[in-house]
Length: 341
Image (cartoon, rainbow, N blue to C red; front, side, top):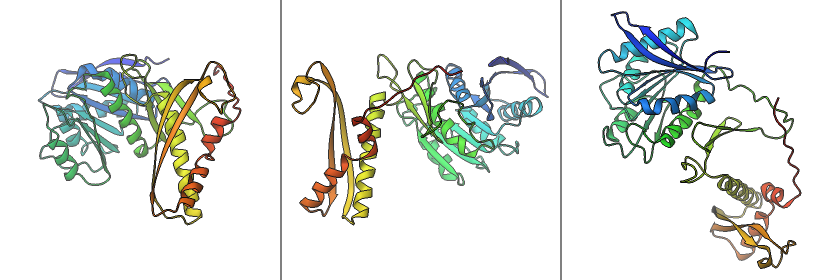
């Protein structure tokens, strides 16, 4: 079995060597990436998160001199020994290096910069993702604006709210890597591997740990989400499981209301739903069958905007309780749990 992390020394043509770390997924490799960084503390977290998405990562700390040559050297090493890289990721000065190197590595399909300074660099000929912390005290957010405006489409921007320049908080590194992995997926040559499971019907959802305590990566079809516990138990890198439950019910309810309004030609301009979950005493619920102990209660507050009559509002309120997720929560549910082979 291949060691999931390998330390490498890459010989530079001009002499000396480049110390690098190759992190490999335990399963099928979807793509290879080069990560040029200025933050050793966050590299393991980023690499671990990306490998869970099937992306092998060759990472090294960028230097001021010969930075572009080192990115190209790392890319050539992957091409000669594994597969050509399709992704270049650059943190801080590494972002400048990967932007320049992207013109020298023909197989590159996506370039990502993280808290990178802007320079007089031709935009990449590939898809570009600019990630930047608005509170970065070393490289101001205006650099991200210059990079984004000067780039051709396709291009995207993700704000790393609350993060510092080096992504020293592991939760910030996990978030950045998770968002990066989700974004880059649409530009890779290989499609995501099908999930091996005993599920035979319905929509497949796969949940896996992503490197931080209690934090989870959720893959639903081609979409990637996060879940976590709040501080101090977790690091609050994503919604809690109950937040996601409420989000499921709320989005289903809103969609159901919208579909009904369109079908009945009701002039509904906008709908929004606020949800809260609580554990309450059964004795305080007069309409509940359970009379002892505690039970779960979900409160929905629906806001309907538009020139609606009272009758139309009543009809929309009635249909809200008929969304599929609402019916599932009220019905008898069988959950079959098994250990995967």
